[in-house]
Length: 194
Image (cartoon, rainbow, N blue to C red; front, top):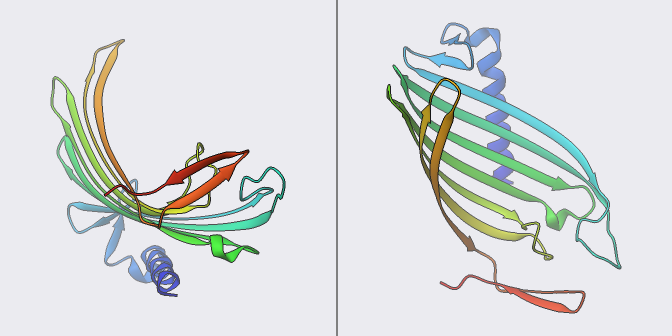
């Protein structure tokens, strides 16, 4: 219930931001809305409807369902001449029509820094994710997870050539109890070793 309340507040915030009554406080700035003299606010709402004919990846007992997803993004950017600092929050609600136990709320928090020097560009991005999901290689139920990504990269561009060198540090933690999964006679365990 709390997640739905947050989602409703976010949607009404976006409606207010684009309504005529907000024009005095917010002015449009190319991509996004300019708040004050420097900060750019880039809101978005995405609604998806899909059908999955085998939501549990079962070979023998296929279950199908309609899935509704609502994603609200709130991104803030602070352009600094040739550089950019950014912060973003995303909440994604996924509702299964029949198998409601599979419904979930995902949260993503992102901080970005991009530095554009004359000779090269440097970029950094940190993202924290809290979500229920399964990787394509996992034949199991959706598992509550927490993931942190940190990306760092250098980029150099010439007239006809560009080179980019990057590094990603990723930490993923299962927040559910140990999960036992048997598919086609193969048993797998998914658990956090901390």
